[in-house]
Image 1: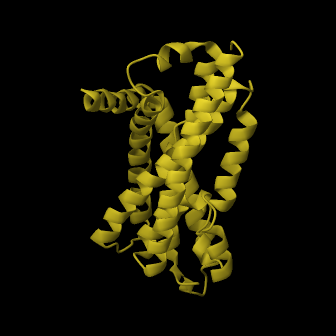
Image 2 (image 1 turned 180 degrees about the horizontal axis):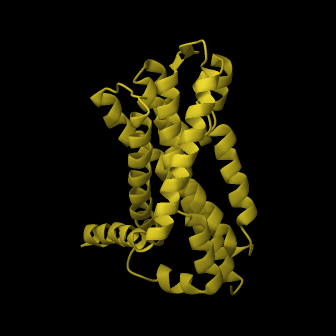
Length: 262
């Protein structure tokens, strides 16, 4: 029964996306626009050279396709939780016979899965029509889905913690803004971090932000290696840290609010 409940939550997230057709069409237009900009920008960067630090032009374009499709598909979990806390519906939602955190996770998973699939299909069709193809092994694809799911969970935990700040602070938009800028700079969204020097790359891969989006795209385009296996271990470590942190943050802030009569 519990499994059916959470599956229905995923379906609910999917249905929410099917309602807003105009938003979906605008998102695909934006995806095409961004990819055209990247294709032209990186074609200039690669003029007169076939590789930059082991990255071909095609690998970079497919990397950016994945990161942009992923980033544009993220559900606004932090704002949804904050709105529920501020308007009082949190008390009703959290009293239901299932985990509050898992409820939002599975609804957002259904929401994001649909957006990610449509974003990726539109972007992939565009780059293939432009003759930009990439040979990917089946094993790399399987590993990609695994690390992408882990990255999504890490992002969810971070957004969940930001959302719970509404227990003690009314406005969280500043925290969301800072988090998203950290993803842009240190998460490898706008360019592959591994295209930099080895020392700089290793510094970035010690931070958690790259494991949300950048690492999954890096693994798919670069393939499996001993270094990527090490990075997978770090991603799993951050996963455990943020799951524990999200649970502790939610429990602590909720308890503090209830004690104060909030």
